[in-house]
Image (cartoon, rainbow, N blue to C red; front, side):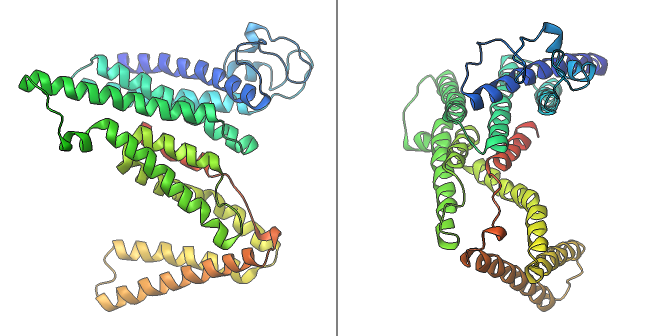
Length: 344
């Protein structure tokens, strides 16, 4: 199969992703409005007129209608084309990931197509979970339970295939402690447990600093879903990556609030910490710290500055200054981390 053939197929996959993205918009909005995803047919949320088929062409309709309803002229949310484009891009990335690797190694087989379709379903669920959390700070049980169910289904099938392979290779299968501890289903179940325990510990730590949960209960269900999909080892990396993403997202908002509230000490300390941390890791990777004592002293200085920043932030929370408190849902960060792990 030539490169042109792959690109043509990828183009069709992108169009499929756009169409699925259009459907995901329906799922998101109908979940938030507590309506069926089937009835009533698509309509303008402002004037209530039923949309024509040419109003529902992914991305293209938004462009041709200039972002306005074809009936009443009211503005159409930019969410529609954004979700469609994101879904199209992610579907294409998943396709290329498995398709190209399969062509270069074992060749195309039913496992390749299963992996692609399965990953598309996971991507779709993660997009829905992230957007509902961003829009209304709500995570629906139906979506997280579906994520958990898909993860368990994959690993049940994986365990069944492993048993079949053992029987085909040895002519018999004997249930052993090693198999019970190391099969895909056990990995998935341990992943669910790890996700729940870690998120609940992080969430309940908020009572120590702010008198409330650090994360909502929906985030625990998302972590359970990631554990079911990725297993206990990969879910740890997913949660670490989620924290990094959350910090990147939250930092500009936090700095803005600190500056507006004239908390210049915390603002300056936070800027200084990240500037010093960036310089520290750049210099460390270039082997600047050739003397061990210098490296240790620099690391201690970095840790001390980080501790000072944490104390300043916690002090603001304990003083009950609500203006200094910010809340950004953690679910989108977990969804983004999982999406990155799915497509890469």
